[in-house]
Length: 294
Image 1 (cartoon, helix red, strand yellow):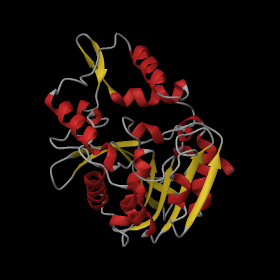
Image 2 (image 1 turned 90 degrees about the horizontal axis):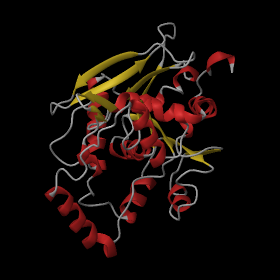
Image 3 (image 1 turned 45 degrees about the vertical axis):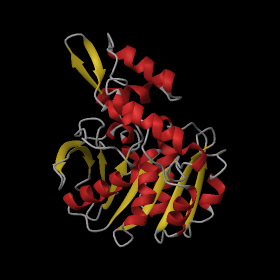
Image 4 (image 1 turned 30 degrees about the vertical axis):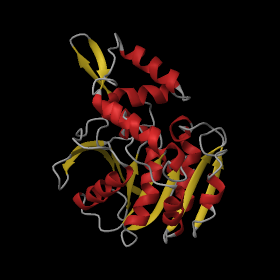
């Protein structure tokens, strides 16, 4: 960790269905009214993905969770659908005794953050999505092939079993081949996503996360959801990221009533690679104090 890394508390909680959720929490005891912010990471990432931003967000009570199947949280017996995970995120807030709260999410976590505002408008005060404009959708033309792929994945449960890495650096290299991000960012993710075995290191995340989904929402459902968001919303877009050139991004964002858009240099993991401007955008949006006198 760098010199800017805050002193975090590591904890866990149990959801109503017995799922164990691991988390990192930062709250400055000197801040009397720190605002509650639930931080949700991307697919195959974990709570460590928010560590680079935390020093710049001093006025927040930040809870960064490992979503089910990721990091140190429980693996699930059932599928990892977006809507099921939304419900579990609400359960996380309840377990934290948060009646009302803000949400920030990256990538998959950004889709969850937006859908949380839809699912519980009376609880979500604001939603920030970093590199997300809502969930992936399916089309009728692709339904049959996707269903067949999903069924085949489940018929071969070892298809996505983790390979074994001789060293942690080998795992970092594998992550860098799969995603454009700084080495220090990949290393942070890997630290919480590896487990040591007698033969080396393997991924800690549930291999079932890589199974094809049984079903996708369609575009009209996502559009209806985004149009229903009543709280303030903030979208952070990377100039070299995933969503800036997607056909559906502009039309989706046009549906959100109280929307602020921040476009910044960087790739998909800009909140890790260049955390200060992303955190500054969050502070402006929420009206909170930036760290380090910035």
